[in-house]
Image 1 (cartoon, rainbow, N blue to C red):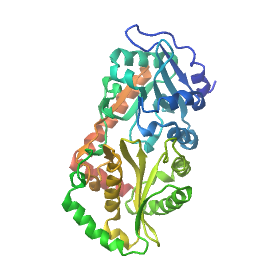
Image 2: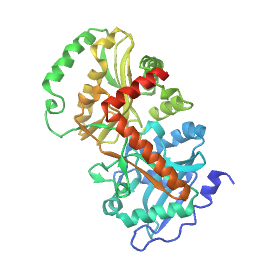
Image 3: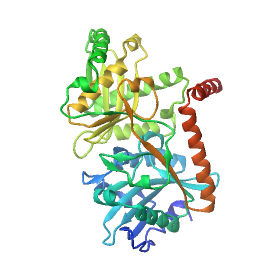
Image 4: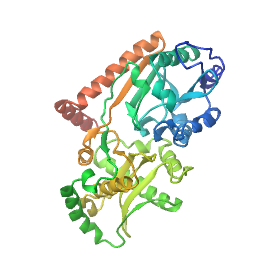
Length: 396
């Protein structure tokens, strides 16, 4: 029996669980199509999830990237006694060193990982609910460990119930800019910094056709993506960093989601750019949900125009763009790049959980936890981080 078939064979076997929990049954599905109707229902404004867990984001990721990495869908849906969906965990199952690991779909391309929750259930969920959920997953699947990385402690002012499970601080930080509605622009970006950027932008403004834009048509999106996939490998090579966009299926995935429209307008990924008639000068792209913009990928020109800080100018435009539309927050993605601190003065609290489901999983969870703690120590100890960077550079 294949792994996918093994998962699907358990989808109807969930018994009633703890009387102390609202969760009455749990299904585990090995096919995204079987989960699509419930999944999309849990995406609306009456529920809680991040844009990285949209069906239209993760479905093409699984098809174009996950399948190539031998990952199998592992979609967990919990229901109340009346079969109303309470939450959906969009997971994928992989086998690693003989251990079956279930983790969130999206891999390196999802900044945040979170279940899709019924909002009322999430607000009232307790530890008994989570224990019931974990017990059901353990009883109905062959997974050995749940590896839940980069989970936000809260989303849209609602705590993430998963934080009630044992957890640890994530290895990386995520710089965050909080936007207070109806405040002047200088409250989010200081007047002195704006003047500095304005001085740099005067050089770019002299270029024929200089402009800032948000791509709206398929033609614009396609043109900007062509520039991105041409420039990004050069930038990564210059920095002696691996190009994650060169991995099998990733470019197709990015093109697919960037061209996928959302029901309420816009696209799954928003692409912002500075350009002139001769070239695309800078690109920043990310996901937005009416409350927050979260940056996914970026690059900027290899030409002499790079000396005028086009990336910083573009971020300023993006911050103002979303603030003027009533957004409350903006993040520039995982990582400690110095430019992010020019805009983001705080960090999004994010955490990891490694939950064993078997004896084999207990050993694997301990190992995963130890590796992540070591990464956190290195990245938050300047001397160790410097040594790690030099070693990585030497190895490359």
